[in-house]
Image (tube, rainbow over all chains, first blue to last red):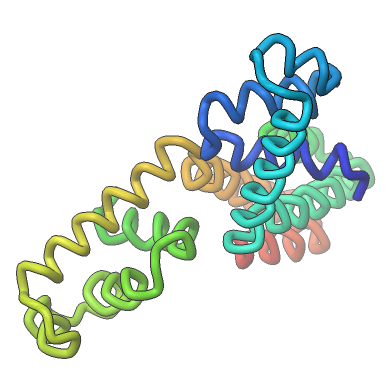
Amino acid sequence: MEKFVEQTLLYDFYGELLTERQQQVYESVVLEDYSLSEVAEDLGISRQGVHDMIKRCNHTLEEYESRLHLVEKFLCIRKQVQKIKELAVGYNAGEITEISNKILEEL
Amino acid sequence: MEKFVEQTLLYDFYGELLTERQQQVYESVVLEDYSLSEVAEDLGISRQGVHDMIKRCNHTLEEYESRLHLVEKFLCIRKQVQKIKELAVGYNAGEITEISNKILEEL
């Protein structure tokens, strides 16, 4: 999986377990693509400090996943629901397509 | 939801984030229904000590759920997949039933 997609998924699932400051920095750098220097200046810390925070956040998020495997589980379910959605077309099963879409939005 | 079902679900999702000792006590008392006294004797701690550990575990598990809402999310998806499964019967869509069953087993 692409690094950015993986980081986004991990953050979606476990981001709330980071501190508020960590969330703020992680969102700026990883999700909104601000540069380390920009975020460093905003927060009044060094560029290296921001870099280290992101590294620690990634480590924490990966640690949660290695214990709970919830991203893995949900990706697996998403794949299966996508398969159901494809099959539903063949059966002309509009209601099933509709529910599949709803699940995929939530996952 | 019944208290036991709720505790089991929370433990299924977040149990790995408890310490090993907490997991051991929680499984014995909540999931396997040993008495507080039995577990206390096994571990060489007081009955009150076991009681307090369970209370702390419940609090920790509920705290994770209040931040991540993954049990809530999972219950919602399970309900929708069950609906798909019911609908699949009407469409005589065996493949969809099969995938639905697989998802329900994993959830």
